[in-house]
Amino acid sequence: MTTRAKSEYSRAIGLEYEADRDKAPTVTVSCNNLSAAQVVKIARRFGVPVVEDSGLARALSGVEVDQAIPEELYQAVAILINRLERVKKC
Image 1 (cartoon, rainbow, N blue to C red):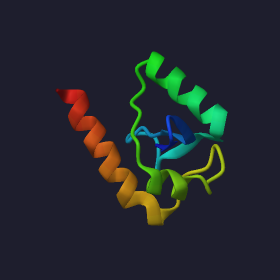
Image 2: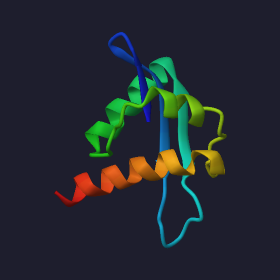
Image 3: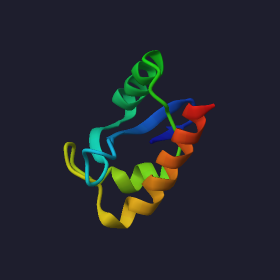
Image 4: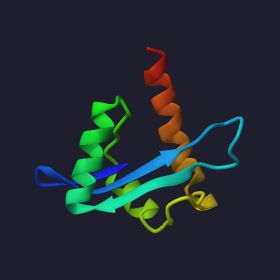
């Protein structure tokens, strides 16, 4: 999840989720400003999907790294994961 301000990303949140292993997605990266732009650049270089969703990124920015997302964000993240899975199958 990312938020873009002007031409740079101002927030980047990385999530990890394996349906057969994890109860809920876990925040793996959370950074702001210059670090966010670097994370997005690296993610793209390695083929990691980057989704711009400022509202979700803002909500997830309150979750500590290595912590599962809160239940109130399950639906929003599930929609995102579903969308990424559909794109991946194409």
